[in-house]
Amino acid sequence: MNMLYDSDAFAVVHILANAPAEGEDTSAQGPQIPRHGFEIVDKRSGKEVYLDGSWAEMFQLQITAWQQTTPSQEEVEDTLEGYAGLAQMPVVMH
Image 1 (cartoon, rainbow, N blue to C red):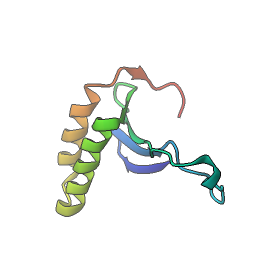
Image 2: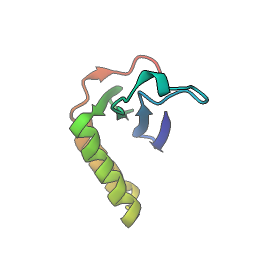
Image 3: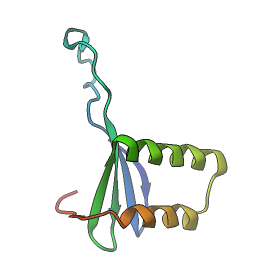
């Protein structure tokens, strides 16, 4: 789990759900499809949304674009605001 962004309004965490533990031998398990996602927490509403699959891929493209252009905090938060509209789950414990 990697914290990607943290402000007064939002937190974004990259979660590697199927990542092997450090030193874990995965050769006997066979090939696995790596799964990862992003959790976006809207601190103002106390809700979160988890993006995986194609949503995670789209968000990863956005992150890659941000790495190229170095957006302002306002631009980042405007984008996160759009995803926060999907948030339905209340944040219970973090």
